[in-house]
Image (cartoon, rainbow, N blue to C red; front, side, top):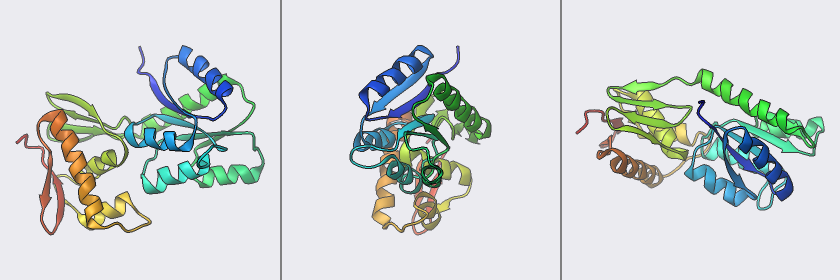
Length: 229
């Protein structure tokens, strides 16, 4: 049996959302739903998904705004399929420039939506390479940390991107400046913000594996500790 593709559906039309859920649910997708921007952003910050299906016209903020925030502020590259009634080339330009990977004009056949979800998921899976450091591995596609023999733990949001940066840098450290630039490439953040995110990630790893796995090199940066201590 294949692993279920995790999909976030963001759509304020309840009837359409119900139809999508019914169709995809019958075809072995694992689904989450948000009817507005705030709920969508909360789910994206707390969970990880394989594909996001995102309406453009939403309450609170547009789908374009969500995509921009996801790409720039949260540094999340999860594939996005926009769905909207606006089919002009200018609208499509806005969708792709905001970070979208595909654009589906309403009304559409639900089978086509499923095909596009599968295509984006396959494309992403092909380019994902498992990163390893000692007994620790990280899959950028699934956002799963695997520590032998303790098992797997799934990260989300900035925590996943911090861990990826650390394991890519191993056995070297990554400087404060380099890590900040990777996480927030277009804006500066103060040191306290970065320290807070590191503390939260350490806490998750401690709870999952009984070890924080991240060491601070004072005045230099952070390094992934895979010694098991």
